[in-house]
Image (cartoon, rainbow, N blue to C red; front, side, top):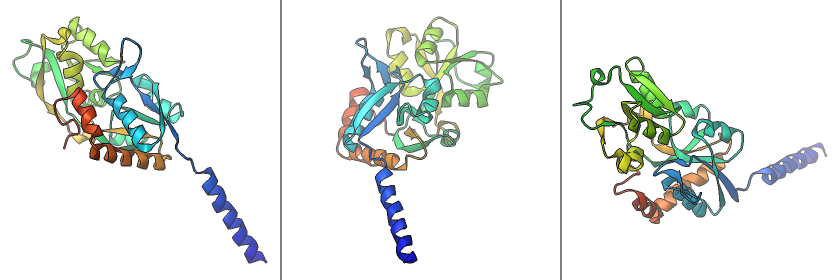
Length: 258
């Protein structure tokens, strides 16, 4: 009798475990909205950009309803941990430091970082050439970490809440260089009228120690099933041509990387 009771109790717990397992039919995705061409707000207030289109395509591939939640970059991981949303799709690079706080999907794109400066202001890039200069960077990014670790004793680092604020300051002459993702700098600044007098300088920067393994989708560590769903969806949209359609809308090169 006791054995039958034990078996019955075990079956009850197993059944309860099945009931409480989360079924993902709706997914809230945190986005930045201030990082063109990956994420920005159109004049009519609608969110747009590569990250936004990817988020919607992944939701469709997973068969879930997606809700986009705009969040300033400084608070984007705390917002995830506070359950304001279930995932982050905001060009967030997968780094060891961030893995201490959150889990990540596989990458969905990978591009190098670069410096930008005014044309004619520097003949070539070197540590000596930029010593004493002011460099703008978005706060709490991989670019901020790289700049601080490698040039923190040589340059005056100016940190900004958004990339757009950094663009305004270099045009106003308040900083000498910017460091950011090369595609964001190209499409968000250099190709625009206000960026016509500026240029890339120095090498492509992609050391995994600072720049990670590409941009991935950040999730809470306990949401392993959702991470698996995103990984499968990334494979799906790359296989069925959706990824390339979105990529070609914004870029004329393979943004996924190697």
